[in-house]
Length: 297
Image (cartoon, rainbow, N blue to C red; front, side, top):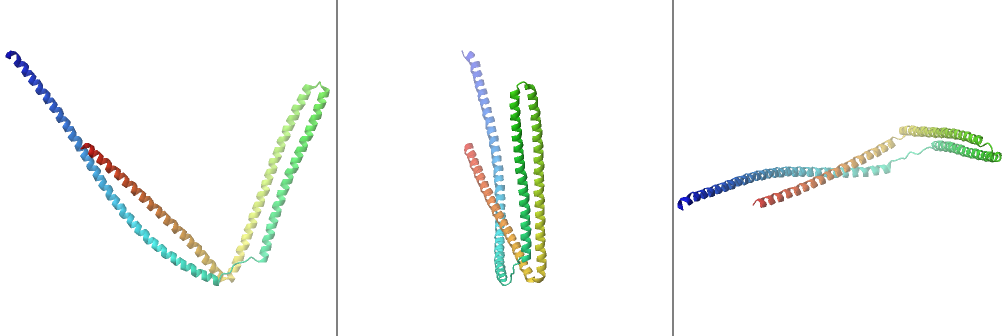
């Protein structure tokens, strides 16, 4: 019995040893893969920490830059405040000066009369052209209507005669075709005439508009000539107009400054929104990294 069982026992021991060896090899391989994976995750985490560090540094620089911009804006606001104060004082002085010496230019009776006459002539001419065009259209409509009524009456009479004669149907049909053709031709001619009249009317209105513009130019020229004449006698007025012009320029500058200031504030709000979005992204990344670490542990 011993002689038979010994080889079998040895074989079983060898097989068990081989199984344990294979299992250990698999476990070692699995452990090696896990170590490699953990190493990669550590490396990734290290890179994320480095990136986070760089972002913090960049954010710090941006905050510093924003601080400098705020300081600069503060200085500009202070300067603008001083300029506004200075402008207020200048306006006050200008107001006092204006009370003492400001003379308004008035049109002479002759110019008023001339301008009124020119305006009246323009209106008369325009109204006359409009009235003429309206009468032409009305007369043409009446003429067309009368012509159509006459044609209809003629047609009715011819139909009556045809019914009485009662034997010339083919001839009647031919005549009717010819009459229809003639009527179409007449309608086409009338349409052409309408177009020509419309073009003529437009041309007249354009001529009136051109004439009106020329008269306006002439009126402006008279005003300019008058201003040149008055400038020689009224040196003080010229100074007054110069002051008004300077004031207008100041108002434009003031509005430009206000626009720039609004633009700066809008830029500042945009930066703050961007910063807040960055912080939210950073929080999400940190939370996600913590979850990963917890899962690995």
